Image (cartoon, rainbow, N blue to C red; front, side, top):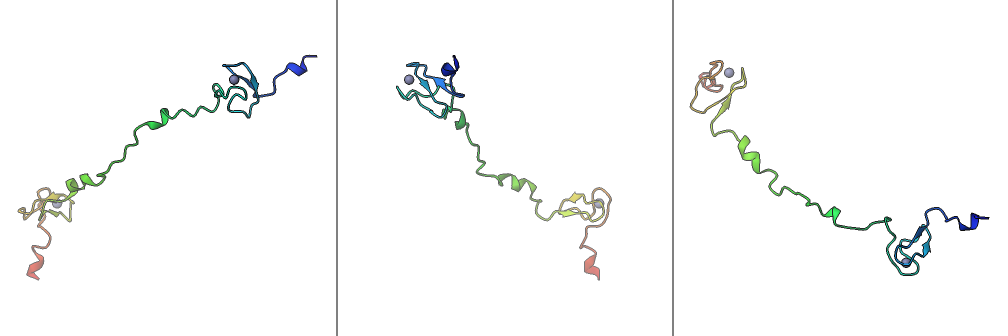
Length: 101
Ligand SMILES: [Zn+2]
Ligand SMILES: [Zn+2]
């Protein structure tokens, strides 16, 4: 006695018409109401703005060297075009001496 009234595992009662439905039913067999709590297909949470940076390489210009600038071969400091010596280690600008070959 009593086993007959045990609900099958996962079964659920319709909140609208109180009909007992099977676990595999996603809607009430009687009134077609959605299964409460189960398989919620609410799409509101998935609408978080998908951020796509359209100009991903826009910041690249910042890394462009000023025209004519040069990197010190000794200390790797970047020097301005008008500098003939490295501002840091005072090494001569590479290429300036090479002409005297
Ligand atoms: Zn129902
Ligand atoms: Zn240097």
